[in-house]
View (cartoon, rainbow, N blue to C red):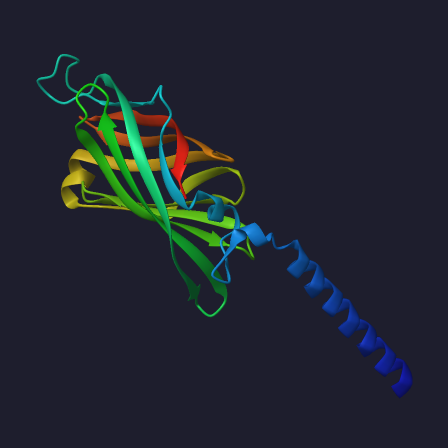
Length: 217
C-alpha cells in the first residue's frame, strides 16, 4: 500500500472515530447530567418521594410470641419517605467510571406511625456498561449490593459476593438473595423487592412493595 493510501486510510479512521464520538455525545440526554456528571436514569430520582395514599405492604416473618406465630407471614400496611441526593463520581481500577446518588429510606407502620425500617445507601450508574447498582445497609448488621441493566424499568439482583452480614444474622436470619424491581414514570416511582431468608430453620420470602409520588425536587 502506498504512503498516500495509508494516509487516506488513517484519515478515514480518524473521521470515523470522531463521528462515533460525536454521536455518543449527542446521545447523552442533558436531563441526565447534573453538575457535569451523567447520572443516566438516576438523575430523575433526585428529590423527595412519599407513598401514594394507598401506601405499600410489607410481608415479613412474624416474631415469636405474636398472634401470627413464629415465622408465619405477617403483613404490615406501610407508608414511607425516600430522599435521593447527588453524591459523587468515582473511578474503579482506572477503567470503570461511576456516578452515585445517595438515598435515605424511612418506612412507617400505617397503624401507629412508628418507623420500623431505616435504610441508607447509594444507587450507582455505570454509563459505559449501562449498569445500575444498589448498594445499601440496614441497621440489622446486613448490607447488600445488587445490580442490573440501567433504564426506567430496572431489575437489580444481588451479585455473587453481594451480601454481607454479622455472624448472628448468618446463623439465625441469613439473607440468601435479594431482587428488586424499580419503575420510574415521571413523578411516580414503583418498586417491589424480595429478600430470601433462612430464618427459624426454614426459607422465607420477605417481600415489600409500594408506589411513591415525588413531593419535592
